[in-house]
Image (cartoon, rainbow, N blue to C red; front, side, top):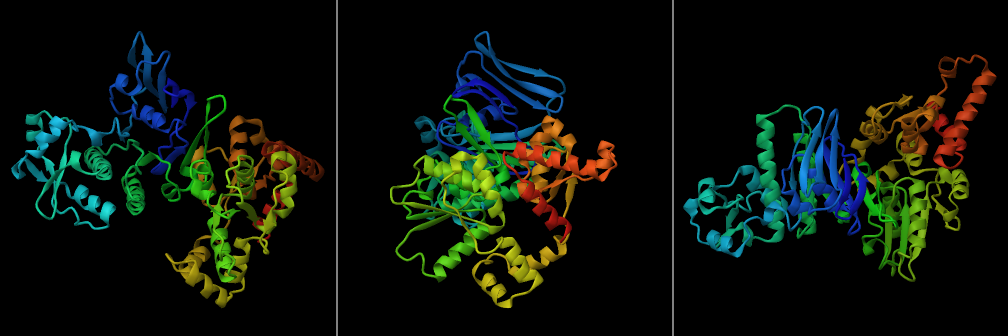
Length: 534
């Protein structure tokens, strides 16, 4: 999708994945989140363009899906729809913010008075899907809104209403109309109602079309526990109904429920252009949004992943290192992300006066850090600590798989693995993860690449990949601890002598280092030993 001169967005190109799952769009206020979602929804939502976007000069919204192109342009003082190629086959719905959201239709005082005067006979019981999930998400009780109703369509038409208002009865028999519900209840019941309609369409017209859902500011007026249940509900719906669900949010609670590959961080640059970061870790996405992740703490510790966080937390508790001190431990992703974020935090003065910052990385990348520092001079001066073991992954593999330490097993199972027994995880590991998988000369899509990365696959790089734009993008996206050299040079390059092969591999290694930004030859050698000398 391309956006031009819409509200605060001068120009932006954004690719929405259509694979099922939930996705988050985040960023500071004014970064363009709501505008992006509203523009995207016009691909299937026939909204009044003047009401939503005004009358901007030289403005346009363009979509491409396969060979189909469609969109909007503001020409001759009016919005005009444009299209070319094949018909665009896409389903979905949009739930907007306060001003334009469906949950606030029919909220005029005169209409509210009409709704107040309705009788039980004007209503019909709400759909079971809406009723049960309304109670489950808000109160963790499927029968909480046992007496939930929706206005009969014949009555709505008679009264001149544009929406489908809901009602519920309180324990004392009072009938509460949707406009009189809380903002959070309004939000949720509108989403559930739209999902119910979408489910019906998908059931009746199962033609394999991609389906995308846009939800703006879903955390509005929902308490933390309800928000958590809503995200889990949307995850399940996205998976079972094959939906791509996008929502804009500032909520760290929501972002922590989403994998980094599905988080898009919008940042308005100094020249007012907008850049998009993806994948993005929650801590990185909220570093400028939430004071809780830096302010008000005596010590902030940046680590690579959730496992490192859990281990360090446990050590600090057992050694009484958290007595009279407030500590925040933030997983940030790979070690390079950790260092970049540390620089951003310190250089932007995001920590309160007196708050210390610590960086703890796995020891097995210690030798790679100097080269990274030399190529990223802004990170020089950062004080880095390393775990006393090569890496948590290798340590746990040695202690739990290779040389079983029953005491450590019991300790981890009791304190860390609360949701799923450790023994089940280890059995799954032995059953499914005994092999390593390598992609040679990867030419798939970026979503396919992200999935392969998520599954822990390795990628071998050859000179051919370094000659194309798509190949360079793939190389930049691959985690450096999963990069290998492709060694079928005699076939690909028509060379036979071992000296020629060695020279070509060295040249390839050097060019990969140039693309990454620092020398990763030691890392590639380490990766090769792990894969082939297992």
